Image (cartoon, rainbow, N blue to C red; front, side):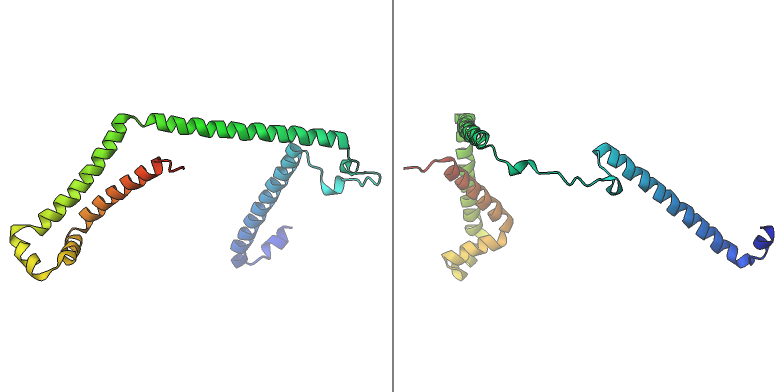
Length: 182
């Protein structure tokens, strides 16, 4: 054995060491994987393929139908479905009433004040921008009313966007909170 080891060239030893380490790692992974599969089968109560036996006399249970039990089960299922539907309707009504009750007079007034302040901010921004003393003459001479509005939007896009956003939010909230039923 020692003579065989001595005949190996010294340049081959790094490759032999690498191959030995790779073999050890692959063996460890294979062993860990095998143990994992065995534990999983035992935990899941699975039978290995080679351990299964064929039962030639096996017949599935669903081939014979008990009509009486089937009709009874269908009736119980329909009754349960009606109970669930009624409960869902009751929960939806209760949630809707809770939302309606949650919004107090103070919240409604606050939303109305917010809407009014957004409109006031938009109006004051437009009037303040359009009627500034230093640029009023230029606006009146160069732009029509629509062009003046576009100039305000171009000069103050963030302010206009925030104000329009607040107004749209309040309008959507107002419309969605009403029930437009006949």
